Each structure stands twice: as C-alpha cells, then as structure tokens.
Image (tube, rainbow, N blue to C red):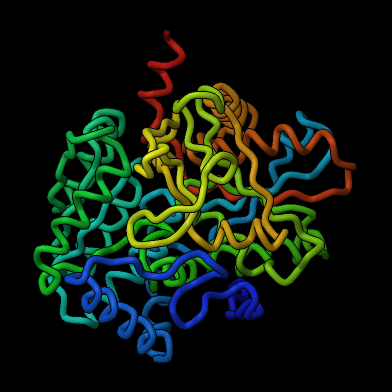
Length: 405
C-alpha cells in the first residue's frame, strides 16, 4: 500500500490560530453563528489530536473509497501533445466518482462525534452532494443538500443519485440560481438550527476552521501522489495542475509539495466565455479583496461590494470567491493561477476521452486544458501531474447538448 504518512508543511503555509493565511481567511460571522462555528473548530482540533479519529477515517478511505487512487501515466495523451510526460491522479476512480468523498467522510465522522443528526451542504456540480449523501447513508445521519436551480437542471443524474441515497435536495431559484445562492440558502437553514445540523462545506472556503479542515481531509491526494511519482519517475514532478473553483482538489494535491519550490503549483480557473463582462469565474485573475461566506478572500464583486454573477461550463466552478489559502499562495509566489475558456475546456474533455478512453468531469477538464497548453512547451523528460478530480458521467448529457448546438 502506498505510504501516505502525514508531513505537515512549514508554518508559512498554514493558518494562524484565528484561521488567517496572511490577511485572508478568518471567521466573519453574524453573532448567532459565532458559537456554533467555534464549536466546530474546537471539535476539529480535538479530533485532529485523536489517533482513533484518523484511524477510523483511514480505514474508510481504504476499504470503502478504494484509496490509494491510481497515478496513471497518460501515454497516449503525452504522445499526442509532445513534450512532457503527463500523469493523471485518478480521483475519478474513487467511490462516488470524485475527490469530494475524502472530505465528506471526514466531516460526517466529525458530525457524529459532535452529536449532530443532519449534514447540510451546498453543491454545484452535485458531486459534493452525492458524496455527502453517501457519507450520511454510511454513518446513519440525515442529509439535506441545497443546489441552484440551474445546476439542478444541468446535473439531473446527480440529483437522482442524492435522492436515492436518502438526501433531501432543495432547489434554490433565487438570484443567479447557482452555487453562490446554494451556499446562501444552506447557511440560512443551518443558522436557524445549528443544534440539529452540521454544515459540511464542500471546498476550502468559508469561516475558520473549514478552509484548513477540508484541506487536511483532502491532503491524502497529494501524499499519495508524492509517493507514487517518486516510485514511477524517481523524482518529483516539474508541475502540478488542478482546477480551481473554491479550490479543494487543488490544495489536496498541492499541500504535500508546498515545501518543494522546484515543483510548480498551477491552479486553473474558469475563463468561461471571456474575461470581459461577467461570463466567467476567474476570481484569482480579476477578483478583489472582499468578504464572502464568512471569510476574507478574493471576490468577483460589483462596485457596491456585492458578489458578481459568474459563469462556468462546469457547475462546480461557478463561484465568485476562492479559498483564502490560494490567495495567500499567490501572494507568496508559491502558487500560479491561470484561466481557460469554456471552449478550451470542452476540447480537452473530448481529447482525453478519445485518446485515453477516460471521460473527465468538466471541472477536471479545465486542468487537462492547461496541460494541453503546457506540455508541448516542455522537454520530453519533464513530468506533469494533473489532478483528474472527477469523472464525467454527470456531464455527458450536457456536453452532448453543447456539441449539438
């Protein structure tokens, strides 16, 4: 079995005791939520120090999820592109089909430890919702998932999966009817009854401790990838590439490599239909400092300070903010952030499907699209690791519709 022993990155890459990564993060909360979120922080700190908690989670990741996931050398894709050797970290092979199961199991175990009865969350592409409903079914908890009405229509197969697993799916038809509104709706329900609910945030966003907690649960991805690439290539990769919306799959991959400056960390965000106007979600490229969903971070916002409407071909990436650690990594010069368009994403989806027989999620296809750009510019002995964060079963009907237009 792959060695996944935890090695914490140096302090410069971690949050302080108040959850700040430099100037970003924290817990900007209304008074009635201060104590419920502080309760989560205390419970997570206690669980983190308890070996039995980690043992139980590791057992589930191994026996239930199927970890470690494969690090696959994409030989056909590499030959097609020329240049670097491209490896895919196959999170799409996890039970439920994405990286989301890693942190939902961790949060479900924490909720049970706290005596909560219902997991509540937002979802965009539906993968977080499916993973949370799965974790709830496994651990005997109730589950309620809020989802923008647009995403309910785009991701109907995942809605069915959530309901089959016993979750209540709440379609949110306010505002932009997408991920930001789903977060707002779920938070409002949680705030009304925090004794019943455990809020299971689906990315490295939100108030402290969530950005650190979700990152920690996802960091198994990078620990595995580090051991696997050393075994396969005898050295560390030249670059890691991952899609970024909130940023959990990216930090899951990046964290084990933070103290290796020779390894480039590249986050790929949605350029949508272009970086002019509001038909994109390029927060790291065009966002400005602001507060969103309990955290100080970078936000796509109007002149009045309201979150802007955003767009991505991938429902899981259409979010006007980003995890605060990503902003800090860019400021430290450790993380690089680029954008790719919907058209490039769709082309990458088709390319990987045709040359490797692997159908990627549209979210993951953003990372593939940048690998398509980057690999041909590098020498043949260069190594890229791309986080294939999810499979594309959920997207095939939508892609077929797009291609038919």
